[in-house]
Structure formats: C-alpha cells, structure tokens
Amino acid sequence: MKEIMQNDVIDNLRSIDGNGTLLDILLEFEHMLDEQGMYGYENWKLGEVAHGPKLSRYWLNVTLMYPYLKMPNPRAALRLENIGCDVKFKKGTLKVPVTVKSQEDLDAKKKPKLKNHTVWLVDVWMPRKFVDEALTNRNIVDGDINQSELSKAYEAGLDDETNIGQDV
Image (cartoon, rainbow, N blue to C red; front, side):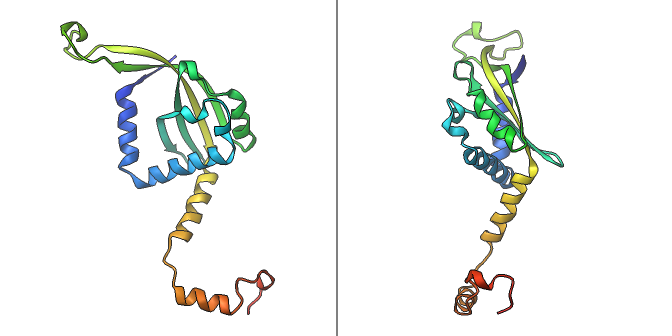
C-alpha cells in the first residue's frame, strides 16, 4: 500500500498553480477524460490530483486519488486503455495531520500526529501525443487574428471547401 502525505499533495497543487504550462497540460488531460466519457461512470468526477502531471518523452503520468468508499468504476478505465493509455488501480494511505487541540495531538518531535485515511489511487499513463496535439492546436487559435486579412480571405472564397488545396 502506497503512503501519500497530505503536504506532498498540497505542494504538488501549488507547483501546478505556479506553472501555466503544467496547468494547461492538466486541463488537456482532464479534457481527454471528458472526451472519453469517463465522467459518465460512477465516482470518476470525485478524483483529486495526488501526483503529476509528469511528462516523459512519450507519456504523461497523473495519479488521481479517491476516497476508499468512492472507488471509481473500473470499467471506465477500458475506455482509456482503448486509446492507448495504461491505467492501474492501487490502494493507498493518505496521511493527514490532526488538528492540534492538546499536547496529546503532538508526537515526540512536537509535530502534529498523522491520521491515516485509506484511499484509491488511479495511476494513468496517457500517450503524450494527445496532450501535445491539443496544446499545438490551442497555440494556433490563441494567436493574434488580423480582422482585415480575415475579411479578405472570406471575400476571396478561401472558406469554401471546394478551394481546399488550390491556389485561388
């Protein structure tokens, strides 16, 4: 059983919040889950990012955490596996510091004692191509658009599908 410290989860979320690229990657990851219909299955929408996103040369890795009694439906993972993802379900323990009300709530080092909560960890390895394609397309759309050039293109008929591949 894997142990996760609540402070590590909070630090991970702070690093995502402080890095626009990681936030964009995580949003694209969430968009892929939505496109695959994951949120239609029981409890998938309850997941919290416990680790990641971590990028390697070909993969994006995100670990989602769920309360033990709210395990996400494993059948939904087949949708991700059908597009080339690798999904693993593991039991884990989330260690949360207790609220200090007395000396009994502190350990020998004068730090709050830790309370264990059993959780489900869903480790998703998604091919990086899905995120890279989406981010590339977003950069094209986010560029500045010259309205006069756009109007000229419409007037020239460049929006007509019969002109695709032809010089008009």
